[in-house]
Length: 177
Ligand SMILES: [Zn+2]
Image (tube, rainbow, N blue to C red; front, side, top):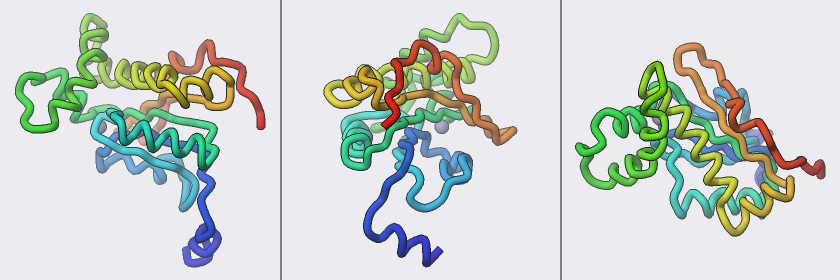
């Protein structure tokens, strides 16, 4: 560990940015089997992003030259469950999270199966799309093929990560640099 710290004291060059949920059962480095200096991580409940998160992603993209953003949702997400089950009944700033997840809940409301798990999946897809459209930095880098933005789901039962097919189609041609 000490040797690795020494290696990183002059700077970081993480290869990916993870936009994940704060849930204590979803420690991003452990899930992806990565160590110090490998991942630039932004975590909020329901991996909901607002200005400070966007700035962090732009920083990673521009300054750290990270070429990949993974939006990582997970099964049984409490933030998504709250948006599905009791959206009118949340105190304080938690309403900010619910407001951001609401559209995924309504879009997935008529799908067969578990309402929370459908909304979890839809939430990741919507978040990927909004990052791809985020002006002025991410959208440009994404369209130019300099930045990949994809979505994934972590299953807290199996420990497996599924990259979402819906976010892997029609990608701009990625430039190898
Ligand atoms: Zn969660």
